[in-house]
Length: 351
Ligand SMILES: *Cc1c(COP(=O)(O)O)cnc(C)c1O
Ligand code: SF4
Image (cartoon, rainbow, N blue to C red; front, side):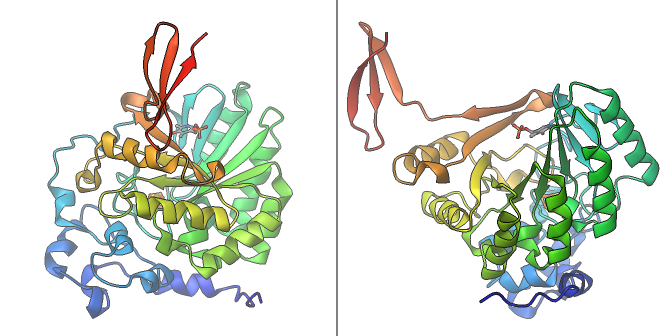
């Protein structure tokens, strides 16, 4: 049975959010003073719902949101390694690929993830003024090659309904924009925000796609399932993005559990991102070989629809490329030597 959704429940989870380690409940509070020093450079925020999912200190959810002294002490020099600022046509609009743009419509997040790609601005206030929004919309209108607008941030679903609706209206009225995509952590990190009112706004803007950001099976709660069911029932195709993170999901078993949970709640895994080398996130880094090994074990052991592509985002704004474990070992005398998921060798004519 579906529970009755209290319309303002999400607001109280946000209002009661935790902004420093010293204010964490005692059973998950560790090294508060040392960790709180980090907050001066990189703010902390955990809404009350997400906080309730953390079982103990250093568990995979805790690691994603509780500051770590290592954030101030890594050897990654760049806070914008993907050159997002350089590729911003106008403030808040990243135009890297000819046919699509990322529109940073919100500066608010349901939680502040310590590994965020946009750590340079996460939690540091609203990114765009009304004039910036207008300016970005004008740019999209004038750039006829743009076929898709991706709303990101921050988290677009943290905007108030009327503001989000207004942006969706303006973007969708541009004739060459064929699809809109939303990237959001809200369906798992603050599922109460997915209200009937919000869903009825979103469904007016089809074809609208939504990718949820989820990193660990413990994030796939009954509430998240309910939120995704509302979105899927409104005809919104749901995908997922996951960041491969040390100590969070860098094992086959955890990844398998996450992907199967996502599939079960009607979310089609889309990308597994190799972590970007963003200053302050070095302690989450995983070797590419580890990611490839996980991908190799997924193929053949999970339904194909549960398997995302493993993506590397190239430095300097070169764009994303998929990484795939090598299955073809050599090409000898016109024969490919191919290994299957069990590691057995097969010969296959290459021509
Ligand atoms: C990831 C990204 C996109 C979208 O890429 P897809 O492969 O279409 O998901 C678009 N623009 C920028 C700047 C991105 O980082
Ligand atoms: S919700 Fe997204 S934008 Fe916000 S801190 Fe987490 S990863 Fe970054």
